[in-house]
Image (cartoon, rainbow, N blue to C red):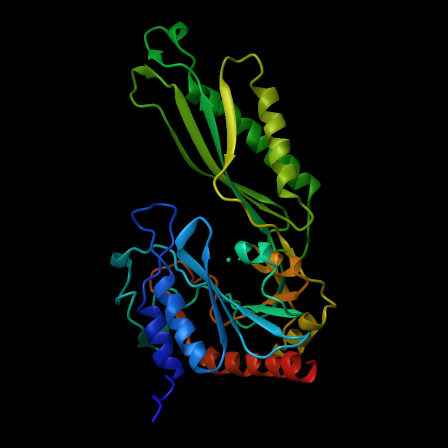
Length: 350
């Protein structure tokens, strides 16, 4: 006799209990393969064809494509299999144990759900896609893009008693920050989109480090910032524009300035409000599709020719927070919504 398929709650407990932290800091970074293997086994038991595809430069991490059926239509259900790092001291319960309190399910990753390598392979193939990020079951058809950049100023160190002995990189960074803030103001004057709660591109100065001692002229200083772009803003052009501004700013200064991306970046997403999947999601949920400031793999799926929306239970305000939770009242409506979309795009339109 075959083993009974695990219930929704059993699967949620298993997913929460399988660590898969992603971090730019190696000491926190983990493989997502245990989660991939868990999902692959469940889906194989349901008759899905399974493909596990290690990332080219990170073989300890992988994408999973599980396919059921064939034909020209189809619906992609997309989510990611990792979580952010966490501070256990901020949690009231073990972040890796699904805990139920006050009609909420608490656990790391419960409210937080990215696929460039797949796009380069032209996979997956379908006409429509739903990304399961937490939207409170309100459909989303627009989101901002993001780049994270480092600006490095290299000067010349020396004894602080005589400024002529060096060229201070911190003072140079002060000049660079002023230019970056002027650029931010310029971008916010040039680009506006009233669909967004913050209707202009934002730029946040998030990290700075330079120098090693008060009595030494600083030889090197580095700044990290992020820029969240609106649809229509091209990230390569933004990087070029900042390069040109900084180069002009530091001409004949004796300081060297360089800019490098901390991540490759994600473009903004725009699925037309008249697209069938947007219209269907609005009809099924009773909500008009919205715009959000966070990023997903949506632009990559659109690039593959799919109509893509973001729709899922939970709220983005809970993601990446201590005591992250998923409201139990949204689980059944989510299942019903996905069932209806599968019926429309995998049966009626097959």
